[in-house]
Amino acid sequence: MNPSAFHTAFLLLGSNLEPRGEWLQFAITQLEQRCGKISQLSAIYETAPWGKQDQPKFLNQAVGLYTPLQPEELLFQTLSIEKEAGRDREVRWGARTLDIDIILYEDVVMHTAQLTLPHPAMQERRFVLQPLYEIAPQVVHPVYHLTIKELLDRCKDSLQVKKIARQI
Image (cartoon, rainbow, N blue to C red; front, side, top):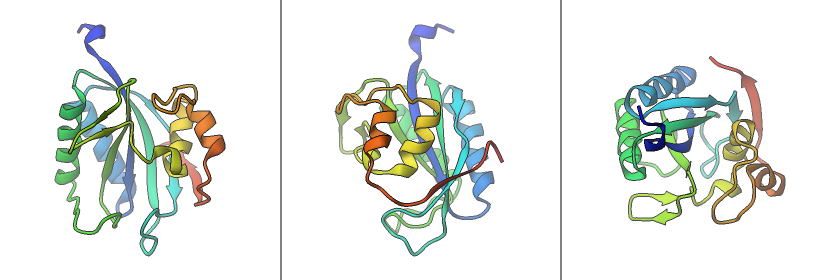
């Protein structure tokens, strides 16, 4: 394989419907089979729900991925994986079996009807930044020109983010 044909993306996995840990593992397996090579995995964090708080806590995990896919192709694959996991999108920020967000894709800045990169709210969400900091503290946000560490240090989100396991 030609390494120059691969791109670096960072994703965030999330689940708050049981079996939460198994859904994260399902996502990792499917990403490896369909999207490229996982280069980094953060620990698993239990996090308070964001946006709609009357629901179970989430498990979240950041993933570094080497992928031959372009951003839109990666999005198509992640949505397909979510659908296979029974993801229901009827309630915004509602409970879900599996959520796979593309947080960063190299230094790409784009906004289409389907995809915005970098993830438009990543800098406001501790549950995104804390696991991402673990695997990519010096990666620079292509719009704010701050490292993940700097974004985490400035993040005003006070919702609980607790490391619970290296892997499930």
